[in-house]
Image 1: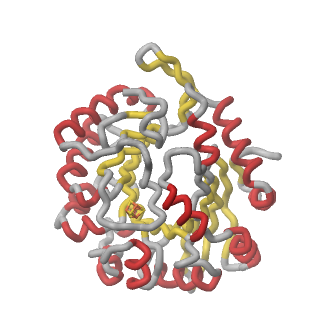
Image 2: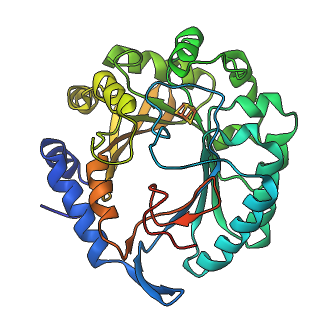
Amino acid sequence: MRETASFLLEDALACRENRDAYFQKGLDYLSSNSIGGMIRDKRYRFHWNINLYIETLKHCNAHCAFCINEVNFEHQDIADEKFLHNLEKAIATVRFLDPSIQLVGGEPSIAPKRVRAIFELIQKYELRKPIITSNGSGFVLHDGLLEDIAPQLAHLNISRHHDDEEMGNKIMGFENPLTNALLAEMMRDKTIAPKIRLNCCLLECGIRTYEDMERYLAWAMQMGVNNICFSTLSALPDDYFYDPKIIEQTSKNAVHINPLMTKVTEDARFSFLKFHTGSHCMYEVWQYTRNGKKCVVVFTVSNNHFARKLDQMDDLIELLVFHADGVLAGSWNRDCKVIQ
Ligand code: SF4
């Protein structure tokens, strides 16, 4: 078995045949290639290129049946003042790791005051590569928000699980104010457009066939989108912190990606760029060409059984999460590897 990152298609093909072995390899690689650091008298091993996720708000205005944020641990939103005070402390603590930043939720964009304040901290501490993952609704509801943060924003990942607006709204359980027409308008803004990536979760009740994917790509590319991620629902352990309803949904609604990837490999419009395996998330990056236009297409597969394995390694930290209740942890589990 070769490296965890590769520009060779044969490595991606080998991985498709035995994903668990590659997740284990990603976990082993992390374990032996981490960098050491002390926080409050405790020695940790950190990922060499770590990301700090800021759970901007637990609340979300959408209701996706497969939302991985439905967890069993105590987890509440807190007032802005306390949130921002704790966040600044957390940033000061982990700044020596030079983390990249990603705002996630719940839904970040429906908390405009908080998002603006977080971006002020990003500027103050010169934090790198800020990304927001969002359903996009708040950028319609709150005039000027996106324009205000755009100069610093590296990417805006918009979750869009279907090209058909009605189907998309049904999947996300709300009427998204960011309609297809408004998304197309956003793509006409020369400053914002290059920063937009669409995230489409492959679902049995949504985009599930190769033809669905082709139609989605055509829809997105005619708006000018040139960066799209298709992801699968993560396998979830049933004896950890996930709500049983979500576990049921993720197994019922999950699409088997390998048959789709076989078609991608055979389709001359796709050319392979690279492959990477982390400890519980792996991706293949391809370039898709349509009517002379090019689009980067990423296919991701994750498995949270391996995230759980990582959580059991007390000193090994692949990612940092500032949770919505003001706690900084080295895990998506708010009670695991609590740093501050
Ligand atoms: S938009 Fe994201 S955070 Fe909101 S319900 Fe859907 S999956 Fe969960």
